[in-house]
Amino acid sequence: QVQLVQSGAEVKNPGASVKVSCKASGYTFTYYGFGWVRQAPGQGLEWMGWISAYNGRTNYAQKFQDRVTMTTDTSTSTAYMELRSLTSDDTAVYYCARITTNNNNWDAMDVWGQGTTVSVSS
Amino acid sequence: QVVLTQPSSLSASPGTSASLTCTLRSGFNVDTYRIYWYQQKPGSPPQYLLRYKSDSDKQQGSGVPSRFSGSKDASANAGILLISGLQSEDEADYYCMIWLSSAVVFGGGTKLTVL
Image (tube, rainbow over all chains, first blue to last red; front, side, top):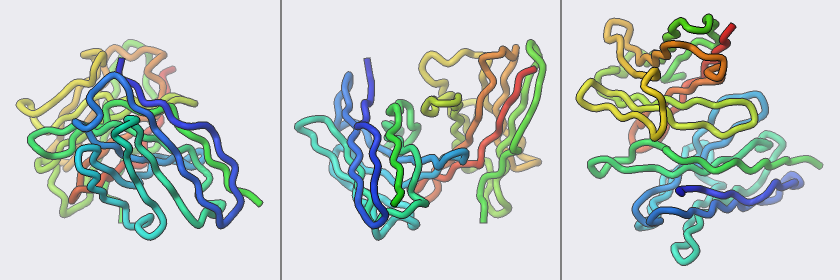
């Protein structure tokens, strides 16, 4: 079955970087994109950006533009999201989600990873 | 400025229907957009429910019961998620979403209580 399995919880010091992985299975990796969404404790969903698994094209939310990098590795069917210069405000659950396409446009985020908790504290 | 506004909470009784709204800010015409709906239960990732733009452009998520449906209220410039035959398991947070210039925008979410 289609599933996305994310890497485990991380604890980081302020100023550090974190790299979260999202391993896909059960479908053709390059036919879809990946979205990254985070959720701070008790808060709503916040979109971070997307990456096309077909050509590696990315689009980052303006808020994260200068400190996020999203990549994919087609040989292992894995997507990655790296966030740099962490502060306590980055403490959140980070989700990857598969993005479908419809008429050459991005469509639904139809399958989600289980989430990765990132805690930033000194 | 917030693009998608959702009521923070809503309560409804089992067996009744609940209508969750997602209002677009002035200047964003609801007719233009596909509205996506997600359900999130505590401790779990969001789950895709459905997409609705019109009766001819809609999609139900895989395995999502037909008692979840989408519509629009053009007069209110809002997308609507209708849940009929409410069950206790429907108690969750619900988020709407649109694509805006190749970026995703989420609403703030509605906490639905079934009691």
